[in-house]
Length: 253
Length: 189
Image (cartoon, rainbow over all chains, first blue to last red):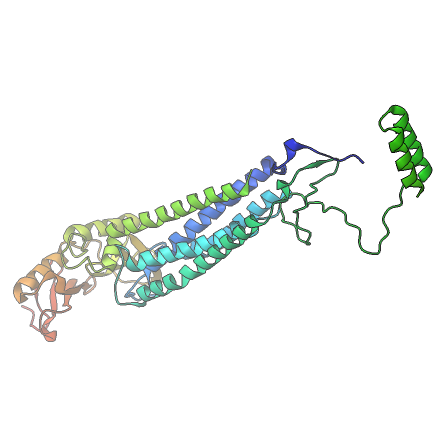
């Protein structure tokens, strides 16, 4: 087998298949749905925080009646969570069409989680401290402050974790930085990881073959055939008669 | 298509949109009459107060548009809200609230046969409150509520002060048009 190194291919990124038109539409729909879910959730939470405690119904006059649309906002609050899950599912389905799994580390799921909680924290903070904040001495402001304090770490910690995990992946040696070898379906890279679990994206690198201890190496050529090849080399002038004799002695032991 | 840049763009758009939505909602809340009422900025005879004639008239007009044949069998007016009972010809009584932004909200229904009033003079609560303020030296912000009383046979108004005078000098009554204001402890003339 003849293996030659192609200098033009050395260091080039591996070719990746795109998601296709259908996949791209799914990805786009997923991202738009996720954006709407995050913004809708934060707006609904902000609105509910603004309303505070309220009661509606019955023949009595409520001291704090619920304003029109309160029920719709609560439905949106819950529905946007399911909307976000739907968006992530659409997004993943789009990439699955290209045969690619989701990103490890800072992927859409992690971002959705972090943005939802950070946005919720912003909504609560705005409700508690914004220019239109209501300080009626009730529990609404205390609840908003409490949620503000709780939601910030819930959003920040996964974001930092995802960034750290993504950075660690980037620091690993890339298999596609090694020369591409023609004649085999992958890279022959000395720096390629030899452990199990190759990264999810890109083809798995091929590790150079090393005989295990105790396993006999492949048998040498037949001495007669080697002598015949040597004679041809001598006849063609590739080697001198003296070199022919020396090599012949080596082959015959 | 690379996923990293795509997610980066998505993150920026999502954060910007969410921030914009929240800030727009907050900006609207600053000027929203309902939110102003919740913050205690709608009091007495202020511009948005429902005790004012033009505000109450606008609210009652909306009620009339919604139930053209309805009759008002109960009305309670505060600066931040007005609660009504409106009976329709099919003897259904609708519990309705007018908020500080003149929004209507029907909370419940029941059955009733009260006669009620086809029209209520919207200027009466303001006239009564001003008369009480003049008489007692209190401020418009001292009012608690003004209530329609007496049914269709003997309609009138009852005004309750929240503060500003002795506790036994805070109840006043008046005729339907807002005249004849007197303390509830005083004999009718």
